[in-house]
Image 1 (cartoon, rainbow, N blue to C red):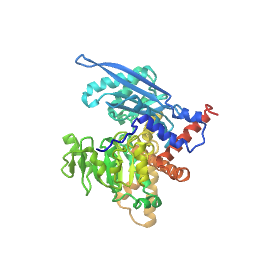
Image 2: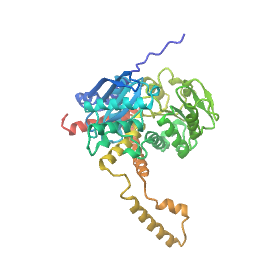
Image 3: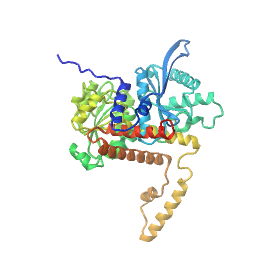
Image 4: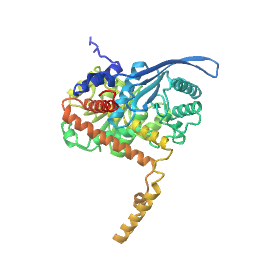
Length: 476
């Protein structure tokens, strides 16, 4: 009989271990390291909700604030049966480090309610969301300058709009009230590109990682993404957009998609839009006519590929299943998908790991843009779009005179178009992801060449947070 491998799967302790590993490379006061690592405060509460049929239910909620070295603190709101205090604290800590890695000036926070949103009607979900928000307002765990929630597992634009409206009801007349949450619908103060931001950030991060021949050669890979094979675990918001952009814009071949109830694969590649439409029509990806369905979700680990993207929940890749993985690059689109034991195994086998605290940062980056937009009360691009179009038209006209020929209409139309908000958002996100990856790569080579890139990312995060505390005068 095979023996079960014992591994600590407590997410909060895992994040602490990752922190300690990176801290060992730094000469920072131990008291300061302890302050950086500690979760500053956690608000746990129970709240009743009365539904229209006159029955009550009691819900458990949390909001953790990991670090106030930057204000406001920022983090998603999770609705899930798996929510617990350790998970919320761990995710808040990851948010602190994530923001530091990509130079977003927020501290880390996270919130959640323990229940399965799929079992409730939209009307019931609205009551739960508004009641949860009221509790946060009561204890000042939400506000444009204090704590700014965003969407996460089980929540989206709809829930963020409810939260913003509830806050505005309790704080009438606040000119910056819309900045109390991010991830809102565009018509309610949101920003173009936020819905797909995390998946878009995954695309940009992986694309940058494939620009360095010297890093790819030991893996048996060539630069560029065209033709690379990809397997995605998790086909929610992040997995869908990451696979869509990578396949449509970078030419990768998505050969496998794993969900909670099955795996769909096709060695010739899956059409992501067709797969997504099938899910909308049938409620699941299983039995997709242009792929093979395996009813075992864990079979996703058995598909050989160039890039494996876990885009679901934490602790998915463990010592129990990591030997099954046959990839060259593990790109962590989810928060904490790989346990320390599994990471050590994969790293020892020469697999490149692009860490979550970098690759998952697209969402909070664009949330920062949305927050800034709400505070400025101005849509991005509104002031300069027409001016840039006029300049481009004159430049194209001068070129046409110089060459004595007309530029084709479609090309001319593209050249003179001024930037829309989505163009500016994607440009800012790509710049953020590219710069952050280069910083991580440099630190990895200089300070921790025998360790994983996760350790390098944590080194960067710890140094930045430590500097902020020192500059505040808290630790001389």
